[in-house]
Amino acid sequence: MIISRYLTREVMGALLTITTVLVVAFLSQQVVRYLNYAAIGKIPTDILLLLVSFEVPYLLALLLPLGLYLGILLAYGRLYADNEMAVLAMSGFGNRRLLRITACFALLVAGLILVLMLWVNPWVSTLRQQVMASDEAALHMIQTVIPGRFQASPDGRAVLYVGELSRDHGRAKNIFLAKESKKRGSGGQAVWTLVLADQGYQVEDADSNDPFFVTRNGYRYEGVPGQNDYKIIQFKKYAVRLPQANTRASHEEEETLSTSLLWHDYQTPKRAAELQWRFSIAISAFLLALLAVPLSALRPRQGRYLMLMPAVLVYILYINLLFIARHWLEQGRVPVYAGMWWVHLLILFAILFFAVFGARRGFKKSA
Image 1 (cartoon, rainbow, N blue to C red):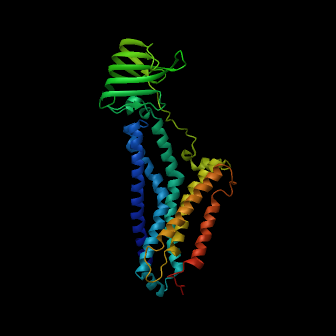
Image 2: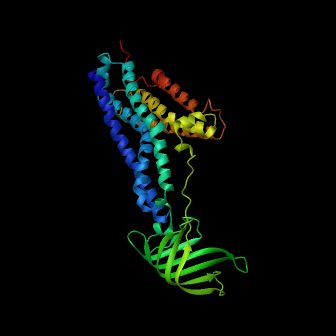
Image 3: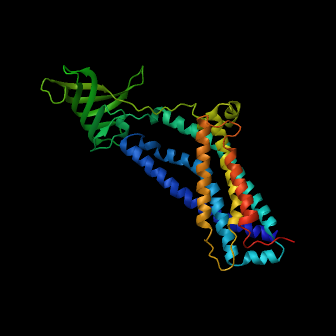
């Protein structure tokens, strides 16, 4: 019992450290990506932190198998390098007991991943879609524009520039707005409308909820760029319909569907692939933990990081095979009953191979 707690504590410490570093690193990439989206006007800044927080459970579920795998490799590798495993082996603590303790710990981690993949992540994905589809997250140009910078609309048919913007993004000053109209000139070229105004604000149509930008005290130019037959109109108040990004993603996307609904439509390739993917992440954590035990075995005077690079290559191969199997299943290239399970069988055979023939370095048979 004391040895079991000691080994569990070593693996737990390495697991928490590695997983935390990985989550922070990948979450930083997501933060940069969302900041870029906010800068170019794809998402409003007021939901930026909320969207980043939605990434945490998904990243945690994906990175826990890698954290457990590397944690076992580093923890057990240190014990082999310091000859602690040799002492345990002489005390009757052999390969089977080490595998048993590792399997029990891996089952707990796999259970946590299963909860995240089957219930938490679909719920979080649904929340994300609701936030992106909510009225306050609708991507109106005035909500995402940056003062002193030209801002293109999502469809590329409008350009907006404001010199000053109120803190609540409700009112703007020194406005330049260029918008392509549906009219065509004599040569079939597009007619553009140019609006220069002192100030403006955004409103929504009471019936259609479409966004309009109301400008005051300005000029409206209409014509084909490069030609001199254009119209000039001076106005005190002029409303322009603003383009709106299509952020209302379908709730029928597989990642937002509940596990029970995926199971009900299991014969549909895409939904079968999503369901098998959710189970595969948890299964991969358990199999990688078992694979790490023989890979962590070291002979005397070998460096503790000797097997780290080959082990990482095995992990990369495993994960890429899972992605390939998922793609094949979605495309209907493999039957549903085969799906992604054949990849796990290959890893299971690899575990048996390393345990029996390839990686018994440092192990002794228990009495």
